[in-house]
View 1 (cartoon, rainbow, N blue to C red):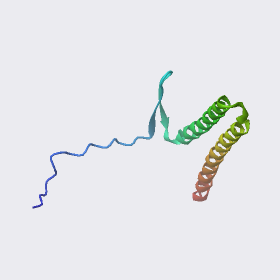
View 2: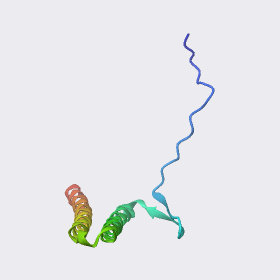
View 3: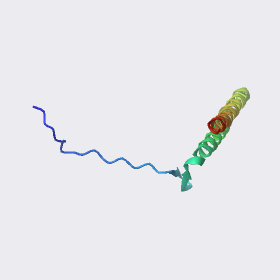
View 4: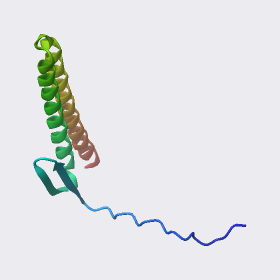
Length: 110
């Protein structure tokens, strides 16, 4: 038998979207940083963290590789090159996206 009333549990209400995003970054030994990022500037934040993440992970990987064995210099350089490639791709995609949006705005304006 089917009933037309909702079950005993109601779904939780979804958080309402806002024009800004709340950002919280936690680094265990250092602490927590919080802030609000306007929607227009969110892509810059994402690009910055992508570049920083690539640089930090590439450098850490190269240092760890050299700690394991000093003869692994070629592998460490390859890790640094891979990190640099990731940085260039992230930056290039960010610029292309920005240019595409500007072109779209210019086409809409008579």
